[in-house]
Image (cartoon, rainbow, N blue to C red):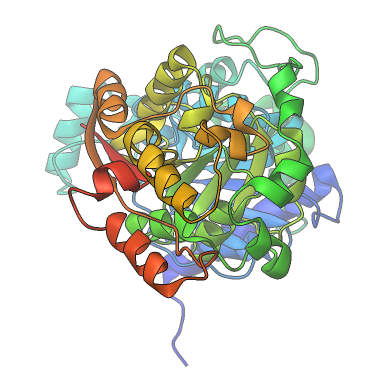
Length: 497
């Protein structure tokens, strides 16, 4: 049996301390609480906490751990968390702030994503500690940066002191948007109760610990986001924005998703497991990897989000329609999948949050000005090099050129089709901005994407009983130049340059 190394044992002790403090503050049962661990590194603390919380998401700028139980890992920057406003119950920020190039931006993001009344476990070093915590050199953190670097070189610990610890007063100012509950005196007075390192045997009287708490080497606080919808101390709102009811939110009914929206039969039969080609093909293009951050705009019934979550990605499904979200939330739950009502023109996420964004059968439902705003928002939310994957139908070239020819042939076969192709569909009024390949390319270029557009049929024409006619239909929708006017499906990938 391999013996855990000192680093692993140290992190397991820290996990036990965090758990003891959170249980003391929140109560013994944490099973309904969602938790985010910022700066999870190898994920030792994250996996230990996952046994007690509903789920724990571990993020690190270089995260490389694999999921275990109700834990999930993603690579993300603490200054740009890939979560909507007011979403998480608990956040762990242990020994992180001193490594951030902008602690203020880190705390601002924590404040944004934490629910009102939510709690943060914070621990971090004190600048005025006699023995510096990371390099174990006396008075190192007291020195100006240039002298600290010289000290490091003389002590042969490297050439740069890359840690930025703050004082007690500076940290209180940094966390000024929270209610601060200082657990440091309690840990010093009763170390065994809070699973502090078993080597610490001295109990310091509470009064003495409080008197000298500004000089302790390490702080341990619980910080609570106030319930009041007050202005943020960083100049940004922290309250929950009220939903603004609009007709389109109710125009997309459950009947639409279960009888008209392509894939409804597969959804009804398999509850999201089987996918129509218009959804399976984008998934194939995306090549989802564990730990990636994924956003599905206009998630509909939620099938894409479900399959991304099953691949180990951290995925958000957004839709404007309440009926869609009710169906999506009926899918099997996953700790790394969530759904939210939101407007595509104003995404509730910071910049550079996602590796991949899907907009499948959304474009044709947005008026030109709204489409431009939504594409700009997608570009903002994508990481550099990230991809926006689009499917839209119909292809206007088919409606203008191919459909009249198809209608004429069908008339010869005794079938009278309407002059307007969209009138065959009960919800045609919802299509307000139908596309052709050149029109979609122009829209993507206007929003700074590097576009790739192509036509690829998702139809199998099983409704056609004549085998010869079916074969001709398949050929016309697959072989250029015929497919330019007979293929009705447009795919696009926009890469953030």
